[in-house]
Amino acid sequence: MKSVIEETVKSEERVYSLPFHYSWVVLVTVIFVVFSSIGLARFGYSTILPAMQVGLGMDNTQAGILATVSLTGYLAFSIISGVLASRFKPRLVISIGLALIGVGMLLTGMADGFFPAIVGQILTGIGSGASNVPAMAMLAAWFAPRRRGLAAGIAVAGTSIAIIVIGPLVPRILVTYGEYGWRISWFVFSGMALVVTIGSLLFLRNHPAELGLRPLGAEANSPIASSQTAGLQWGRVYRSTAVWHLGLVYIAFGFSYIIYATFFIKQLITIGGYTQEAAGGLFMMMGWFSLLCGVIWGAVSDVIGRKLALIILYLIHAVAFSLFALWPVPFGFTLSVVLFGLSAWSIPAIMAAASGDMLGPRLAPAAFGFVTIFFGIGQVIGPSVAGAIADMAGSFFLVFLIAGGAALLGAFGASFLHPVSPIADDSLR
Image 1 (tube, rainbow, N blue to C red):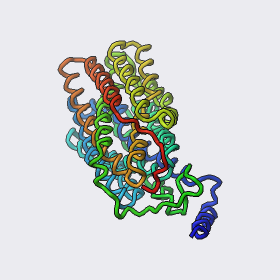
Image 2 (cartoon, rainbow, N blue to C red):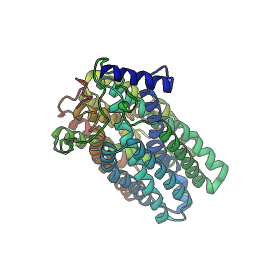
Image 3 (tube, helix red, strand yellow):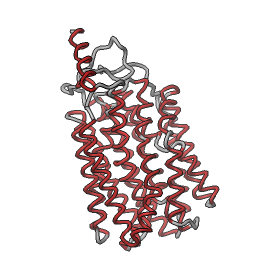
Image 4 (tube, rainbow, N blue to C red):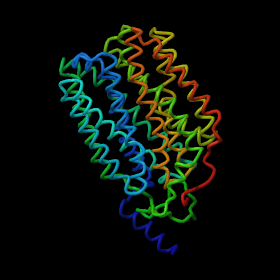
């Protein structure tokens, strides 16, 4: 049996002729999936929002509702996509999700009113949940536990890359195309998402066993685990109190960061006196500072454990969000951006890694999908509540303070987690 496995591995290595493990190909592809599903679909909305509000005549409440319907679509498909990916083929689920993102963005750009835009954003949200959750979770199959946090941290850099790209790109499109600029921006995003759809079909593989490989970092003498999902104990996901606790902590991130992201540009323009181009420049700075945050904190969590890493990150977020309200001057805004950037996407990366730590790689998509429901609930509530408060108060002062308070609650909740650390190779669980 051993000789058969060795021959299979050698055969696959000859087919791909790669001087490195195929897990790196999967990881790079996942980066671009995150680029589309989170970077473009979610943060692209923030950069386009001011011009889109003018074009469609929306107030802050409607802008918040529009963000909420997209996030509702994300929430609805978070658990569904995780279960489907665990039971069937992640590559297919991810690719369909990316295609939906492309179509949703296209329809958003074509919208002639608030309600048609809702249809486009619902599709975009559904596609985002259907692609991001299984893409992040599948890394648990390709990387052994002690490299899982690092891999997830690298993957979330896709969001940072998107911010770096769209920060200067959207203002340039808006200047070039005037009143139609926000529509062209959505069309450009749509084209990018569809290109990534093709890439995911070409390069993603569902499990190392399909290529006769072990997860990267697994013991050389460990058996090659099967990619089959028959007989999985699905109830383990929903009966696990640790998974429920993790999900409840994740609500705080979804609620707080989406408020910050959605009204980031709006606050800079209306309160800070920034131009669209200057605000886009600061948004791009966030992308540069956040580029390696997932890598750094993912690796740190591999060493100090997921619990302590989460507490530290939530405390940093609490300060960053509060600064946007309490110190609305260029230095305060910049300090907020730096703090958030250095920690931005690390929490989702750690949550994805923790899901694999708790239940193993084969149940990781379902586990991560389950905790993402809680994250999604926070996201759904955040923009609508924030937009309504901003309209009533006449400013975003309370909005960003509420975001900071929610992050502080996240740190408090994380302090009661049982230690979640990658302590064993669970590839066969």
